[in-house]
Structure formats: structure tokens, C-alpha cells
Length: 528
Ligand code: G4P
Image (tube, rainbow, N blue to C red; front, side, top):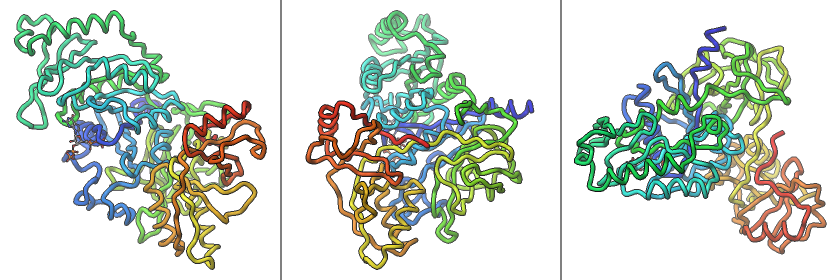
């Protein structure tokens, strides 16, 4: 039992959120290097075709040379067992990216120091705040010309609405980058570039080093002392409780590419975050170190290997310990079962898991019985975890089948793919699936849908784009038939017959709210 507690306490499960190109992959690679999990930086995620040798996942993935699925990477560091949940970022951005955040206990937000907060970070951040998890910020690329650190903090506070507390402070940027001042130890970690070599040398300097002036560029010492006074006097005080509630983000400056500031960041991160958090089930909190096993499915990946037509359900273990041979109970399916071929996905290579603990993620072969949000527990337990919300799609298309004789396959395929959570489907209220509007979070899902309908259901489809850009669930009791709406707003229903509104612009959303005083709209569909 004490072993169980020990194992769980030392686990950290987090996701990295960022806008494409901010440096998420580079930071992940450096973190993995500390754990010795990979030998060579640059093999984590195959963004280029040449790096795709290890993956036999969907054909589409190979054709495009990008990763469609989010993987989980585990490594050990200083007695900790760390799980990084990868959130797909480029064109492969999808609802899975959001769902992955439901499985994390904290998030690392990577921001490009020259660009500040960007669109995709904002979206991912919103989902993190739904769960009030700690968010730790890494401001990257300080070796390039950067915005002023004060402006960057202000940007985070204004755009994202979270208070910031810098843990270190940069001295210059770009060609004049001299390192960071660590506020806790009151020491300077100096940055000594070495002609493009990726591992820079770092030396610790003390603030009262008599030669400090000569080691920095002209004026940097005075500016640093002024900044420190300002931060100590007027900055947000560090408060671990606020960090843990997701109301204050500790901020670190560094350069992932040069591996500068990454290890101190990792060490602090482990201190700032806790082990796996309790999860809510039926109004009760399930403690991670409970003596029973429990997990929930947060993602289903179909056809990871076409030859075997397999589906993998990704589960986040919430309590207890998982053993390869144990019996479990699938709550939603109301049946006892053995988990077959439990796997851990390491940099897209799969290996069978013998045992795993609360905080870990396992991939489980799924013969088609699991749905997103399902709970799996030790026999004898019967609770279900709070489900995963449905996130508002951002792209919409009208879809119909080319050959009207194939109606049955079309409806079956569309429903199954929607059930897996790869797409969302909507229809006119009180009508069948004559005209289906497909909504996706990332446009690549349209290609995935077309590809899968053709390959798995033998149905060709015609897809027409629509002018809609926003969708909102109606959460008030309003009767959709009597709503006063702008002419370009459309009422639709999801498969549970919840009513939603489709809008062409944010202006139309405001219009609807102004003209219907009791109308309440929500950006995500409530979890069951
Ligand atoms: P992402 O996963 O968030 O999309 O970003 P990624 O790590 O792939 O980094 C995007 C680009 O930024 C890469 O360059 C990477 O080398 C660079 N980069 C990451 N961290 C730093 C940093 O601290 N300083 C500087 N100067 N650059 C950084 P690329 O040329 O687009 O890709 P590649 O050819 O190097 O793979």
C-alpha cells in the first residue's frame, strides 16, 4: 500500500499548450533528454516525411507527413515519473487536442517571446480554465529579439485573464541575451552562446559580484536592479495556493533550442505541481491513492493500424493500480472484462504495459465497446466519472452521399465516426439525416471523415462548405421556434436533440443575445 502511495505521489501528468512554432516540440525533446527517454533530440514527433518510419498509423498521416493523433510520452527524472500529453498543434488540431487537456493535471504554456499570446494558445487556455488546473508558463526563444518582459506579462494578464508571477527575469534578449536572474536563489544564470551549438554553457553569477557590470552589456546591470525592485515592490506575490487553483501562473524565461533554463524549469515545475488530482464521480471525489482501480476514456483512435482494423481507447488512470491481468468492470457497458493488450505509447512506439498507476495513460485495444468519457473500475465499484464536455466546432460543412443507394452505409458511418468523437453532426430540428451539417474543431477532420467513409464504409461523399463560423448550445429553456434571430442564423440539433445556434459572425451572436433577453448560450456541450 505504501508503495502505491509512493508511486502515485511521484507522478506528474501534464499537457503542453502553445501556438504552432512557439517551441512545444523542442521543449518536449529537451525534457525527454533529461529523462534519458530518447537518445536523439528530433525524433519525438515526425513533422517531416523522413521522420515517419516508426509510425504505421493512418495512411493520411503518412501522406501529409504530420501526426494526426496525440501521443503520450513518459519519462523518469529524479525519482519522478512524468507523463507528457502531446496536444496536436498544426492543421491536425482537433477536438482530441481539447479532450487531452481533460486527462492532464496541469499544463505548461509555451509562448514565443517575440509574439506573445497567440490564437491557439488562447483557445487551449480557455479549456484549461474550465478545469482550474495549474498553468505554468515558459516564455521561449529569449535568444532572439523579444518583446519587453513586462509587455509579455501584461499580454498574458490582459488576453488570458490570469495573474502572472515571474520566477526568473531575463537580462536582454537576442544578441544581447545574457541569461536570467532567478528570483528565489537571487542568482544569475548566465547564458554564454557557443556559435550555434545547441547546448549552451551556463554559469551562476551572484548579484553582488564586483565584476557583474563587465560581464553584462552596458546598462543591463542598472536595468536589472530597477526591474527587480519593481517586481519585488509591485508584482504579484507568489502564492502556491493560487497557482494550484489556476489563478496565478508562474512564468519562466528561457530558450528551449539552446537548452537554456529548461532543467531549472523542470525542477521548479515538479515542486509547483502536485501528484495526480482527485476526480469527481457522482458528486464524490475519488482519491488517486484509493485501493481500487478506476480510469476514464478520453480519446479513441480508430485504425491505428489498417491491417488490423484496430481501435485504441486511451484511458487516464484516476485511482489505484493497473495490472495487466486484472479483471475490470466497464460501467457504461455494465459488464466485467479483461483489458486486452494494454499499451503505453512511447514516441509512437507501443509497448505492452505490465502495471501502471493513477496519473498514467494507457492505450487499450477496443473492439468497439468504449465511448469517450466511459468509466472503467475494479469489480465491485460502480461509479462513473463526470464525462467530457463537447467542444464547439469551428468549421462546418454540408455533407451528403454521392450514391443515394448507399444511404444505410452513409448513416451508419457518419453515426459511428461521430460517436467516436472525431466529428460532430447536426441536423435541422425534427428532421432526419437528409442534410447533415458536420462540425469539426480542426479542418483536417474533414479529410479524415472522407477518407474513412470511403475506406471503411465504401461510401463516397460530397462536401460543401458553409458560411458558418460559430456554434453555441442553447442552455436556457427558450423555445427555439420563437427566438428572434438574424436572417443568417440557423437553428440545428445534435444527436441528443439538444438545440444549437449556428452563426456566421460574432456580431450575430451578440444580436441574438440582445434580442432574446432570456437566451443563454454556451460554448461547450455539457458532459453527461
Ligand atoms: P512547435 O512544436 O511549437 O510547433 O515548435 P517547434 O518546437 O517545432 O519549434 C518551431 C521552430 O522554432 C523550430 O525551428 C525550432 O528550432 C525553433 N525554436 C524552438 N525553440 C527555440 C529557441 O529557444 N530559440 C530559437 N531561436 N528557436 C527556437 P524551425 O526552423 O521551424 O524547425 P526545424 O527545422 O529546426 O525543425
